Length: 447
Ligand SMILES: Cc1cc2nc3c(=O)[nH]c(=O)nc-3n(C[C@H](O)[C@H](O)[C@H](O)COP(=O)(O)OP(=O)(O)OC[C@H]3O[C@@H](n4cnc5c(N)ncnc54)[C@H](O)[C@@H]3O)c2cc1C
Image (cartoon, rainbow, N blue to C red; front, side, top):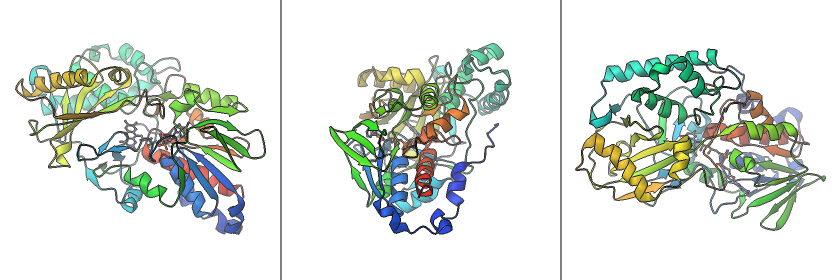
């Protein structure tokens, strides 16, 4: 795949010698400087921890009753169901790898080759047909952007260039789970920038004891105020004033780490209004939806592979199953997904409707005698007021500089972090983490 070769600011941040050491500033000078961080996701906590370590006075304001944001683990069924991020995407060089070790997050290598696919009627898709279509799909991803245009979506160009694949169910699966899942709605995805973003090499590893282990570790020793919903950020004066739950707090610096969906929704009023370039970027960068569903049974009836694929007529819904039993042998559980608009639509469905649709797919794969699940957990990321979506993507109209505009500080006192501000690693946990370190370093640099 063609990937961007942009030299990563984030890498420089990680490798750069200490600013303090190079300029000889006394860390105790920072004691009088205060920082308010809005949001206790991984980006906000990374920034807060780094600044606290440099002896700034740091307070984190978090709207929810827990830290972690989109790193959120539900243990109510006895295993950790990660409602947001599950995987460390490529462990080599990925900052989450060592962070996970420090935090005590356990992981399991999910083998992409351990996969079985079923067509309608439970007919197995042959290994060679699956592999050949996968190769052809990646070839299309390589070449489609040469036909792309600024005002055309991926779907439009795909249908123009490859109409022969439009109604092929296996193709539809790859488009859905190998592209829509990682990006966003194909009718909104940029036909030129769909393949942007750097990736780390190495194994894909899934968290087994809960991804929230990491934010809990980062939050140790930090002053995090929970249940504090920020409604206004006033940066018109020398200090920045923040309104949260009717209280006004002020600081020398503020780092806003709320998700792009929250910025799009104008949930926080900025005074003065944010610069035009940032407002444009907020509008132009896309916010996708992915919802996740964990289902449990008394016994497993499915194949002993890591991934189960199904190729229904419908798209983007319940077509991909992670066999949770592979890494939790005592749990008879499958995790499945709904992406993009289909994902949003599931939020309007009752639990019974969701289970009926998932079971219709599983019964086509494994026969009518399989039982209904004993329990289900599900997410509703699009309607969640703390995110309004899952993660950012390059929509039609997005330009890569928009990610930099989202990261741009204002008046050297208002800073922005979060996955949507990371031009190379947007939409990921590592991107969010690196963005927090980046903004902390900017504030240290100002001293
Ligand atoms: C379904 C799903 C699957 C994913 N899978 C993966 C994966 O496998 N691997 C991977 O690397 N990444 C994955 N991601 C992406 C990853 O989870 C995110 O990029 C990352 O967690 C974002 O961190 P953040 O700090 O930018 O934002 P968040 O974690 O969203 O933190 C922002 C915080 O701001 C708070 N907030 C919002 N509004 C206010 C307000 N008004 N006042 C105060 N606080 C507020 C929120 O409650 C939240 O705690 C996934 C995400 C989702 C949703």
